[in-house]
Length: 387
Ligand code: SF4
Image: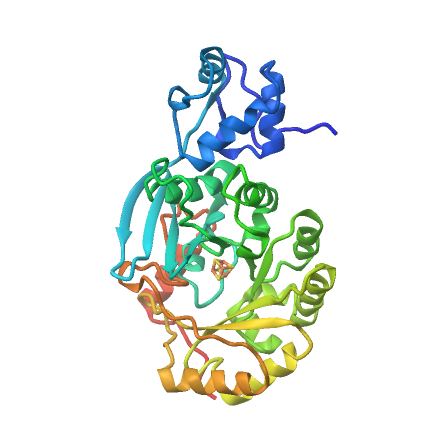
């Protein structure tokens, strides 16, 4: 089987260097063959790059001088700069990763007992415009490259002091749930997740590597054919009328099609797989009993878990966070119907790292952020009335 390096051509001495952060195992092997090296030697390099977080070939102790010279001439390990780092009092960490002078994305690490979850961004901004999402309000600039996606894991991994912490795994879970709709940056996200799963990469188990989509239905089917990972769906509404308003991509791929794609995911997996349903609770909008019963009806035959996420407010957004009693009442209805439906506690909100609060810096080519600003200034942002 021939392997092509999809993202970047092999560099000749006069060409830009190949960034090894963005190469899957098969692509790195192909690169080594191009260099006139045995492909298994690439495994050594992968460990140095991803396990030990090394960014300089000269620091790779068991690599010979001749190979180091070749690599220095043709390749690099280059991650974007971190322009800002903060750590919350609850241990949540947030990095602002600067891609260029006008664009940056955010990456968040959430520790929870033995588990450490990294929330990774896939696009600068987002082309979709979910009404409750701060990323959506910033408009869209571009897709991230494989190297830029993987670099977020590499940066977080290094922040725990590699290579000194050999064997200690701080990042046990990765969710493609940061800025952007991952299925709209399909090829790069697939390749990046392959590296995250690879034992020579970050060794994240398939059940602990989650892709979250707002419902790009055709790409959901393609995803199952390409990579075995966990699936989360940002649902947020139990009927088309409300979902069209909150998650506008629903107008293109309505709930009937989305549910079919979710069932297909469960059916094609050999193990007992469940879909994670994400449901942000907005006071008076999607959190009443009637809507809880509608949700039960919609999901009755789908093996799933429903994550209830009380809305995290951000400036100028018209929605409100429901109070704890209202959230628990909604949860109780779902639980009585047999659904596992944990309430996601807000983490990292003192550093704006909570769900739906990631903003980064987006040079918006859609002009959506301008329109949003204009709406704020004229006070025409409306919220659906409580039912
Ligand atoms: S919720 Fe996700 S898909 Fe919707 S606008 Fe925000 S980042 Fe994009």
